[in-house]
Length: 615
Image 1 (cartoon, helix red, strand yellow):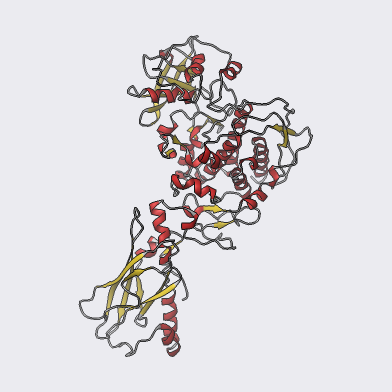
Image 2: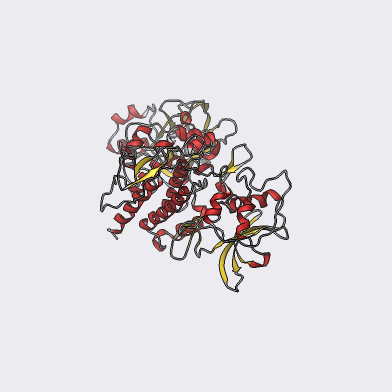
């Protein structure tokens, strides 16, 4: 039998192979292993052979390499000789112990390869044992088969460095990766790096895995652009064009206009449908958290209520440099008395944040089911400020796919509360994770439904952009789902507290959604409509993986360099090529090359319709 048994492959230790005890037939007296180190620094090793033989059935094992040294940088082989005396019939347990020292701040790796050497009484070893290459031609077919079986037990110890990297979650830079890229595309194993085809896509929908370092794609930017060419039609006058205003470095729109076809050339052509819009000639100011002003709210929200005053010391602004006018000024327009919002059932909780389902009492005696975000009594002023700041981001913005606050309590008699319309199925991320646990086949979800989720999110964010508002934290954790499976994008109030593993601090004392952020945002804190496009691509990947963690094995401090080197999230298992193409185009390094929201909406709309034709 010719076969390769890998104990370490592509950065992962095969625990099943390590735990399996392989019997060695009497005719097999040696084991041959291959190993190689592909790290940029030396990897010291120590190796020894342990065996349990109180009857003297086995000669002392011999190695043809030193018991300690450095793992070679090229593929080399070593042999372990296990020879019986032939004086007794016995099965001798043998363990080959290999210890590899990691670099500073990394764990060492220990492997134990187990064998059971079978010794037969009367079967004596040859007087002059020769290496396998010399013995094989002189023996019969049975011994040749045994030798072939032994040669099949190949240990790729050189890839042990990959395992240490995966465990330590450090040194993910391209020069320290442990898998070489070739011109071939490896699509048969889900734990290998993939070089994309000329269209910028993996060879099959089954390549890639949910969340390992080895499930990331690296592809040249020029190739990835080819796969997104249908998103960039040549601008020309057309009733089916929608105006897209280019953004400047300061996050503002230019004074000119650029007509971009909202309906891209589809990779899955079917019926033709367009999203028509009149040409825009005026400049549009994109209102980031730093530039938003109260005029927008006065235009979109026309209802006023009696409000209560909320003051903070002059050393702490409510918005912490996010809203110059303060979150309180927005929430005052929907402020109600403290007894109007009643918390009932706890839905989510963090260190200081609490999310409840409850009831909102209207002045005329009517009630409404609501979702309530609040903080505990002992919350600090800064934590209160974050709740009011982030809870006011979408205040007054009405859209079927936007969840905006409908009431707020802001006076100092107790913790502030922000109330939203209740979504029966709750947080989208938690819903997807619950579907993953029960199995997607047992849930209501299908690929078409997941595409519909992404389409609804794109519509909601597109509406925000039409009002000049950047979201800056697009993710499934900041979406909710109603009973009819309609997705509504919400603000990120309390998300840092109730989803702490999704936010990281890079030494600047600010928790940010690092793994959802665009490359230019990570490097320069540069926010544009295109950076929201990038985050939407990660959200689509979350949908396809049922809310798996993106870049799970990549250290956040290394992520910027990792993305700069061309690595991206791989195509999830069972994800259609057309769906992954959308994600890939959202992650182009040049933010000017990414598609616009109207283009994405048109593409997802047609793909959603095409999927319906096969159901």
